[in-house]
Amino acid sequence: MLRLARNGPASFALLAVALVTGLLGGFVLSSSGSKADLCPLPFDTLSPTSGHDYPISSHAPISSGSSHYSESLLLDNDELDLEALRTLVAGTRGYYARDYSMALGWNNMRYIIETSLYHGLLLNRTVIIPSFVYARSCEYDNSVCAAYAPMVNRGDAVSSDEWRQLPEEQQMAWRVPMSVMLNMTHLRRSQPVITVAEYLRLHNLPEDLELSTGQWDKEKYHQSPSAFNLHGKPPSIHVVENWWYDPQGLNRVDSIPEEMKARGWDTRLGDRGKDENGGWKSLTKTKAYHVLEAALSGRQYVLGWDQARQILQSNGIGGVTSDEGLTQVLNDNGWEVLYTFDGALGMDYVKNVVNPIRQVAPRDSIRGYAEDYYRFTEDVLLLKGEIHYERKPGGLRFTSTAARDVFARLVLFEIHPTDRVKELADTMDLHMRELVGGRMWMGAHMRRGDFVRYNWVMQAEFGDHLQRIKNHLDDGRRALHSINPESLGTYAVPDVTANHALMQLKPPNEGDKIYIATDERDPVNLAYLTEHGVIRAPDLITIEDRRRFGWPLLLTDVLGVVEQDLLARGSFFYAHALSSVAGGVVNIRAANGADPRTAQID
Image (cartoon, rainbow, N blue to C red; front, side, top):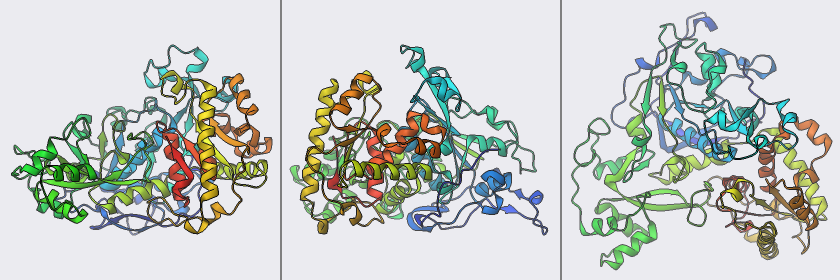
């Protein structure tokens, strides 16, 4: 039986997507109402939807805080029985599966899972995520961690030669249950999510069939009918090939709003039949269309909002001074406004959702995810390959601010670490305050390890790297002294107010100790940090803390999740623009109501 950890408190209401037509995938109960009489309709009996009547609308957020399973369905030791799993999936149209990149670290996996969850909402499908992830290093001798978590050769596990040149002990990884890294209880209160192992249980298959690579096995996973399917048919599958998702020249969006369709979308065509314009009505390409199109380059088939205005003005096209006027000119000339999030330093590695921006794209390049893939009625919809690299958060852009906010809420309020992570971070925060005399403290993330190997580190020489961090934290200390508590603001995220509690302590003094989270493990370099006033996790975590937390804290990747939550509590935070760790910390800070002036990413 799989574990479902009771990690989270009752979730506050999530402004999520609305149910506008009702749930199609119901189940039939006999008059006795016993578990044995549960008989879900097979997913392949559902009729395709027509037009735009999707049961989940990304444009109409509502409150949704109830659990998708009954607490009475939990067995002893917090396990979910089959009826609880069945209840999770009963109201959806099937499963949404992915090929997950298990070679990546946790923060990359986190934002890939965020994308999957949003896609599942768009399609009204139960999202399937891996049952485990790989921790990349052990805080002690490898054999210590191997006593608690299965140890594998990482390259063998994910079929990669990336680490073959390293010493053998550095090639090892440990399988960590997803429930250690992610608060599944909290997440499942907002939408149906199961692990691969739980999917296998539902289909009377052994859990050890789960592939170590994170890929979906179209044969092994589909050899047995559901535990509740009385028709005896294995689950059907429809595969979305990776190159269909958003090839060069196409912009993938959530769904197409009615007003955009009225400007040129042909609802009779969709993905079922393309005309010479790729499924759109004929479009007269004006001068404005052509001058904007000429500026498109590279994989990103979009232009910036201000960039589009400047191009049109420089080509003598008027009426674009105001935002309303620019939108009208774009729409009249075959272009649309899309909504997404800005990265850091012009790159999209941080994948945070705190800097909303507008972009523009040719209307004939836009394809809706819901329009293309909601209509499939197979039990499993599988997106092959990976879609995180060189893409925005969510793996697509949004056609409204409301849709963008739905995704932001999911990331900010539903993707939580476990309670034990938050409790330890809170304890470490108190210890850190004591070390700086009760004042505000500042922290940073210092990515070394593979960043040094790939030449992605901001400063190759260790001393220079520390000095760079200190320089930025000096800027942060001055900023904290200058911020008027009455002028506190928030990131541009939904449902957040300024958190004045974050500014109640006195600002830091020059020379105060600083906290640095780092994957550096060279003893000489670590001693250098200590000599220069740096506090690390081992300085704050006591034996009692370790006993309370348990064995997962032996793994560096789990400790990293704790440190992210800790850094989100610091009064000022600095990190590297190439690191998704930084994006995770900023997301937490934004959700906590921190002022944007109290963090810097470069």
